[in-house]
Image 1 (cartoon, rainbow, N blue to C red):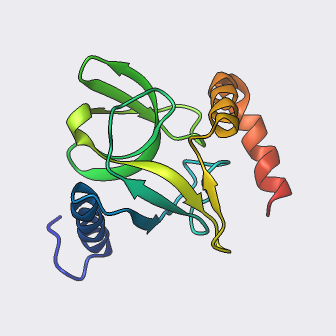
Image 2 (cartoon, one colour):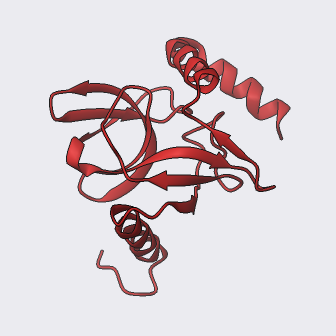
Length: 152
């Protein structure tokens, strides 16, 4: 189905492309996120992410990437094999995306909540939490269900 200028998906892509352009120029950009794929660390509809120019792709980094030649995602790197990077949302229990290193457009350095508070997602505490969370993938379904009940 062709897009026209009134299509919200096309508008979202244009906004993200402008954010990517600014990041490439060395300007940090705060971008709101939608969806639940990064629960419990990033809450779609409430949190925003601070994007910076990517340096190198490392396991555990949260990045903005162009995947499947058709969409942008903010997901965590779970594997790097040569030039190929595998991404997965923290809130996902299966399913991954793959892209090339050059398709990583920005690195997320902070999460900004609805009250303007910033959390560094690259400090030791967050890195450890996300490492443990990745290892809990077999039981994520249950943990996420409990999380959603508690935080409604």
